[in-house]
Amino acid sequence: MHWLVDDTFMDETGARAMIPYLFCDEEEADLVQIVVDALVHVLDDLGPTAPDSAYLDHPGWIDVLDSACAAYLALAPGKRSS
Image (cartoon, rainbow, N blue to C red; front, side):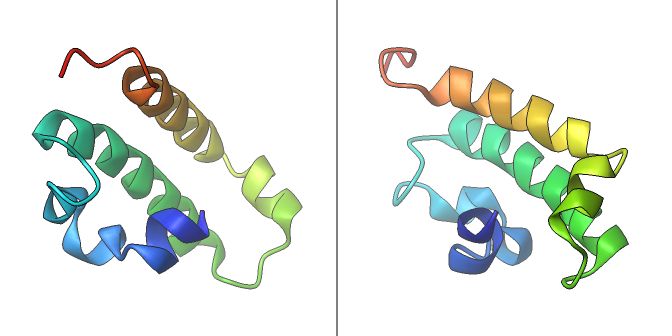
């Protein structure tokens, strides 16, 4: 969570700003941007001081998990043709 938001500022600049430094192309960046957007939605709802259990219980957490899984599967070594 900290890496996606705090360390990269993708919540402010967008994942496409990390091409070619972190992502090879728009497809990769867009997959990660979906994760960032889902995560920011939960963070905005709960604020920075909520306990971990509140994040896990938030109805939007499933979107974080689903989008992170999709990005991971698409970006995993050996999955990309480039």
